[in-house]
Amino acid sequence: MVTLTSISASMFLVLVALIWLIHKKLRKKHENQHTPTTEEQYEKISYHALSNGTNGFSEANLLGQGSYGAVYKCTLHDQDTIVAVKVFNIQQSRSTRSFVAECEALRRVRHRGLIKIITCCSSINHQGMEFKALVFEFMPNGSLNGWLHLESDMHTRTNTLSLEQRLHIAVDIMDALDYLHNYCQPPIIHCDIKPSNILLALDMSARVGDFGISRILPESVSKTLRNSNSTFGVKGSIGYVAPEYGEGSSVSSQGDVFSLGILLLEMFTGRSPVDDMFSGSFVLHKFSENALPERIWEIVDPTIWMHIDAHNNTTRSGIQNCLVSAIDLGVSCSKKQPRERILMRDAAIKMRAIRDSYLKFA
Image (cartoon, rainbow, N blue to C red; front, side):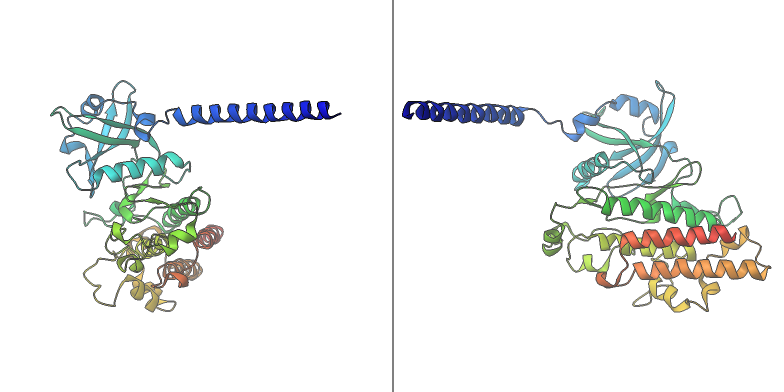
């Protein structure tokens, strides 16, 4: 009996040791496996292809310029495809960090309301200098900023946005942000929501772009909210950045909610938050809030009326209800204190209800 027990014990110990050795070997193999970087995953296009497709990154193909680089229209001749190329200014401080941040954010997301990354290029240019670029789907209708603030004084039905279009665009933006905040694991905070970062497709559907200063939250969001990231400085653009960021608070979803609120107010009033009319405590939020609900007609973007028959009282009443609801939502999003702002998920649901209600009425 003792012998059998000893043999059984010995066999058990050998089996445990064998399992441990196999586990150790597999773990070591996994650790030694090369995990491709974002650049290696996307490096599928050459500098020369991008240079040729933009005619040497000529000004004629320049679509826009930002803090960390410029965006060009590019024709990939071998594929007969038009794309947008964001070329990072490597001389600019933090541009490499912006490149990596945008790659990391965009490789994690799949949503129709987010700009689609096609590939990237990390190479050397014709001068022997470091070259980094991202290649995106081309948005033929440009940015929302170009539609809200025309360079030309000639306003027509074809170069301005109708109320219905604004409502659809708002829903697209908010659905995308709801996805980033509540359905991505870990969550992604955009940090720079503004009209120039909203791009419009051929059918005028919206895409949220430019993730250059986005933040991917750690698994423990509560810890993130406790620990300040103030070393990164103010996250966002003047007029749109959440006030708490200027005081050193850490990145949070409520910061994006504030920026979204300002964007909504700008979309329906046509007023930029950095308009000369605003100064001191009189800001776009206060301008809009003061007009609710009786004076709503005084602050609405007048170009909306180019698309509407405003003589019919029933039509006018329905439009007024829609505008009051939309601007009230923008005010709810852009309150100074984060805890007073509506949550992104609730804001997206509310915006969809406003849009759907208007479509039934219209």
